[in-house]
Length: 124
Image (tube, rainbow, N blue to C red):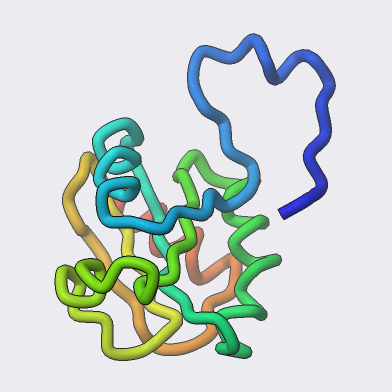
């Protein structure tokens, strides 16, 4: 994704402050992120899925408006993810809190408000 802006102030923060979704390609990468971030929202998607593609600006909005780390992953890149999370359709959204799966949505398009509500409900 593009649109990276550098102001100089962001470089002085203590931890990662992702304002855009982070793309990963493996179960090991996901596990590393789950170990290092309190709240992680994951979208499992596939190339060519029009609903998944329409989620891109939504996920950017969620990343900018919440403290959750937003991650996107094509589970076909690491089939262990399909088995681990029993992925049957895409997009599938997984919400983790302190490394534990606390919510799952696999029912089509989700708006920024839908996903923020999911995050807020699980972290309250």
